Length: 181
Length: 212
Image 1 (spheres, rainbow over the protein chains, first blue to last red):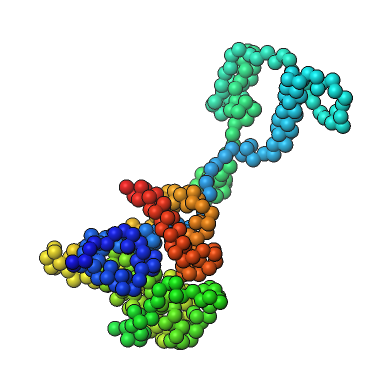
Image 2: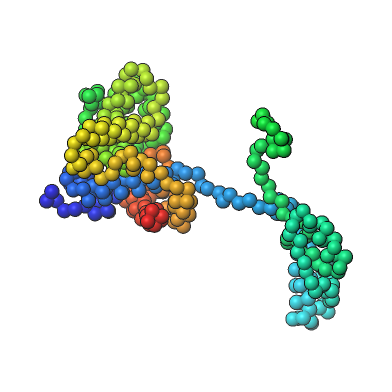
């Protein structure tokens, strides 16, 4: 018991199997008689087990439920964005370097450039929301008849539909009595 | 009891760096060793015991078993496995998992027996007075939560690619000795251990932060 107390680094070396046999035997003999040092050794051993658990666990992927329409192909949107960016670049070039605008045309002269709209369409001043799904259709038609803009989620006139099912047949959910699964 | 069936473990235990062969891979001869051990080859058993004894002892320490008792239980574990092989009860030998499971069973059984015997005695003679933690309790506490796992994995991803590679080789269940890991990644054994200590330090911070 006259031996000095062990340090966590000693216990770590012991757990890793990197300690000389004599030193390992001395450490074992000390921890038998010294409870605090036995606790240090146990913590290092516990950490070793936990690290092995971490190393052997599969990498966890985030489980996120997204609206179904997020999975739709966005070819048209990306193409529109590309055209818009090209148009913005062309306008910027004209503004910053007007001398280059009169230079002879190169082989890229047929690059599609969309003219930017100078006047934005007049927006209604009042927006209404129809969040209640049961009355949404009536609400939206009445609002449009009054000249109001109906604001849907994301502004596309659709309610997000979430992918997911309980695995229970729809007949079972609507059955009035017991249903055999 | 069955300890006499195998040589004293101390005489066959080697340091991990001695287990690596310069010419061959540990994994290549692992299946052959297991096959020979299942056939009753004593030398194969000795090699397997020397390779995995320390791992079994550490698993017992993690369960709160005192180190001297952990050594005894590990030796009894090997004796039982050899005994089962001699009776023809072992159809396959997946080490070290089989030995760790057997050792955990022995530790839990001993803890139950000690508790049953000491219930009538004074409080100071309860097994908790001699062991840091009751093994049956610590066995449940050992399991990491999903949150801890994901945070530890995130912390691991912050380490360098080579450090992650070393950590995976050393801890992913293949039970490669450090010398084999060093040979695979082209580093010295000392450097491999240094990397392992650094990764341990990083993950210890994450896991202890979670625990507190």
